[in-house]
Length: 271
Image (cartoon, rainbow, N blue to C red):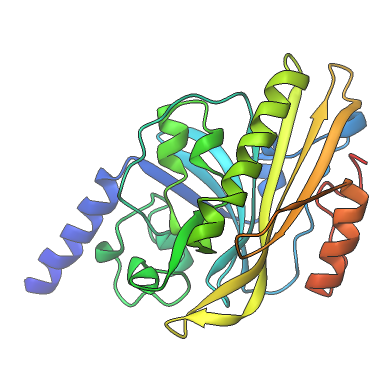
């Protein structure tokens, strides 16, 4: 009876959560709207092979908000991809969620508090960050959210990686703001796509969560004929030093060297 009551409580907690994040076989099939399509050809970032890499279509309510490639071995995302539609002032929430389906694909696709899922092995938990000196650094950031629901959907640990506090609140925040301002000014009335990711480093939090050595982001603005109007990439070490701006081609080259396998942010396009 106790076991049945506990199982019922878990199901109830998962059902009450408004957020969803669905582990899918292919993000480009389930939520393709977050990937640039220059010339009409869908051009997603590279998906690394291996069972530890999981594609997630992040949902709030019934609306897909962004897509994430998550690395269960390092317990951090590789990247999150989203459309930029302008930004608004949103209230930051304090609750962070986890993805139940990363533990068992038969669990609910709704984001949940970590207390509702036992024996979490394949992703970060809040305690990993406690007293670590690192922030839970958003990949798809609150600053780029165009609505409160979009902002709320970013508060999942599948969309966060350990980020040096001074970097997160300093040079990286400056970069996020500069990208948003550039797109508001130069891509208005067009389609703007952003991919933000991390490169795994050598250290870990609590011997569980890999600390990134680099954070990177890139945007691609397409005009109404799906031609590239503007594009740029940014790469910064995970410490509070200035972030380098570069072409998408150069960012692809840099990331390919850092990751090992060849990596393309926009499928080798948006140059």
